[in-house]
Image 1 (cartoon, rainbow, N blue to C red):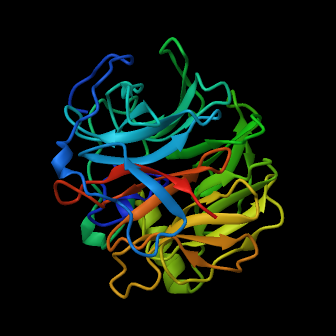
Image 2 (image 1 turned 135 degrees about the horizontal axis):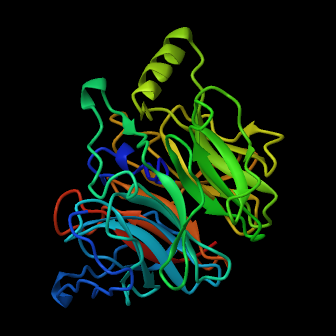
Image 3 (image 1 turned 60 degrees about the vertical axis):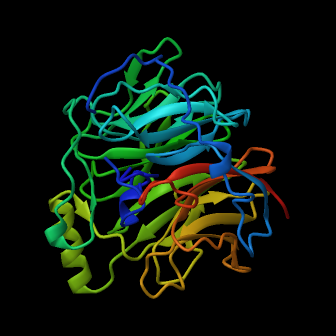
Length: 366
């Protein structure tokens, strides 16, 4: 989003990993074949030493910028965002767990982010700027250093099975990073409707909006626990007067600086907030393990240059931090299948060209 920034948005935060924010409009039901690679170009194994929790790793996309791939409620297909020809910025697609049947489900206009299946696996939730403009929004102002854009044109939509779009949010500024509770009753999302980047929840039809966070700073990229009782998210709350002033100045320009993010957990109603990680790094895209006791996430902790993002897993109480991937660039956006048997994530490994990000799926081994 940002890609949680939106990506539910950290794609922009990953330097050359993948950019967030169409050149041509297409039918919402148009299907595009998955790019194929010659067999001799495939490595014998995509796994690296130390990746003991992964087995049978497969690459599902081949080229472009692909991110935030999330399982359907039945666990039999994926929805993801991708910047690929003919689109100049992200659009939403679905595909099978083997990378087949890639189908465009967004309008082909504007920039999209943070897609998620509804419990019926027919409707799809995502955010888009297409009503603000059919063109891709401009890149962020890098004169401010490394920053993420908080595009004011983002609103949240639900795509119906017949292709119709229903708008769920209609407030000035950023509404994005939306995901749905496994209970099938509420959506959690990030918004600036009250002047800061806060988390909110609403019913599946967009009604009964409730604010969940109230601390100055960025709260976003949220997901519910398997039983829907808790929410995990990423956050940075500036503490010094200088940090607070810089945050407010950038936010007024629809920007945020994502250099330090920690993982937090709260109850689904916004109560009982507690910080899970204290890594002093950019940690993002957290997701609960199906046992509800552990959280997987991506972080650049341990890299002095802050360029290498790997997957880590940690207990909800902050104990037992363990590194999952060892690739020397970017691994991010992890999600377990509902039964906990598979892990999908995005990575720069096995690229054909620099800066490509692709979707991978593996069997999870305890």
